[in-house]
Length: 188
Image (tube, rainbow, N blue to C red; front, side):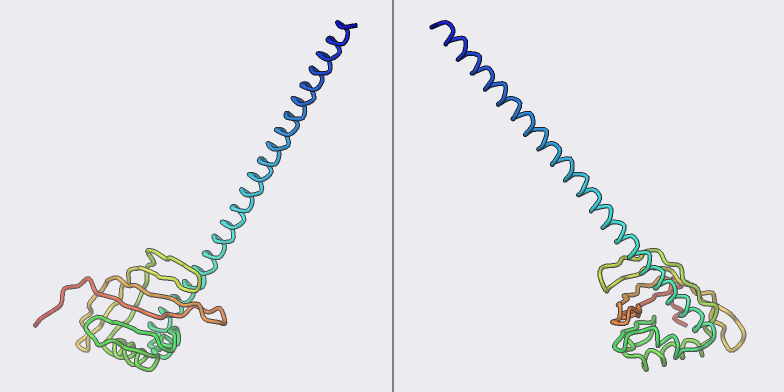
């Protein structure tokens, strides 16, 4: 009987160890499945967020490109009022060799003076656009022809930075705008 009891104890012990090992393996498999599920879920979430960010950026870029096209069209049609309308009510514009213009009326006057001085054929080339929430900044190049009263024309080109603000109605308007010519200043 002594041997039988020992064999039974050993068999019970082996069964217990086997069941423990089986439970550990099931637990490990379950943990691995949970980890894999979380990895897949997080990957999908990140891709979903990135997709939203990409689509948000694309829609903002499209809106700002549209505003830039409206600016160019208004400027080239000598419509300073429509150019000013693309700015926030308290916008600041810093044109080269002029005082700072603040507010739509001053901006309209400043743009009108530039147009009256012979500005035409304005073009923009966007180099960079960064969007963060309701603010975006744009860096680019411009070219414009300035035709003087004596019919001589100067092809001006330069660079610009614009700070855009999303309005409560979803429109993007210029809040800050500065541009500088690449041409040397004529001191004569």
